[in-house]
Image (cartoon, rainbow, N blue to C red; front, side):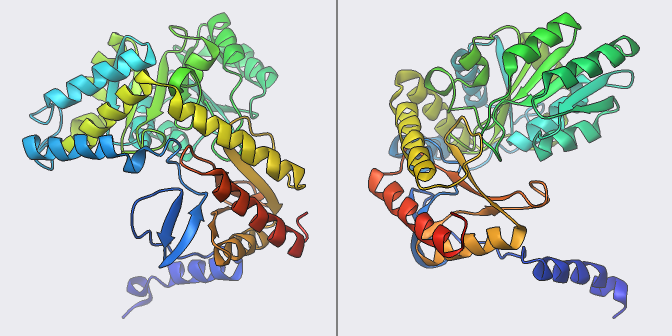
Length: 395
């Protein structure tokens, strides 16, 4: 067989990953994604899940999903613009709009789809997109799909953002400023009030990807916009339904005009089958649960604070996180992955985050504390971190 069909060029690059100590095989989860899981046949404390509120295996969500399957089947059978728009989808969007305190919501099949489908639909040639340098990969890809020009400002640096606006605003029709609400690698929160002020000063639109703020920040997890009290001043708010909500999907919250336009130009809505009934029903149940109590978000924050304090007191560098996401800074790529492997050997699963997800030399173990963790589990995790941290001279 020729070299082309052997994919030799990829084999060489895979070998490069192995040489750099960053090659990995996909871990296999055997059972529900809980605070303690069976991973590759071994029982471990799970500190790597986005299941912030413990909803992924919640009995009321499961019951809603089962009932929906019995009534509607396992799939919607079409894109929403043909015959895949069920009353379930309509109800979900109404409930989400009420939850987000916005006029309207458009639901997508994933958070990634939201950014890939929305950014290109609301910008065009003659427009400018200004993006935070640490924005999520899906935003970067969404921006690439747009025909608009682009500029990048230094992470959360408002002087740099204003410099770009001053220099470039007059040269473009529309300007869209895009930021994550909570940055997923460091757990820091975007300075949204200042971004909104600059946007209003320079007549620009604002777009917040609140994947890690949804279900975490704001009243009962209403997100970063609610946290800062900026309702009606952010044009596009993206949320995921796969992290704190525990299921799958994403959405854009904003005006009725936004929804009307995306139903005609959001490509994943036009060209990809809509969310299955089980997912839609369980998401609706999750949002209603959040609207009825602060119990889940309260527990999440209590656990987050507890874990952070213990890790800090133990001497770990946990960065500048302002949310339950707790990065434990290690440094080199191979050392980070070795630390992760040693933790797993001792019964704690924390995935190592290395280049290209984060800059070279800033490898970290990203701990995702959830409402589902017990204090005993968190204590055991910290003790394991301390033992390995001393052994590897990280602390």
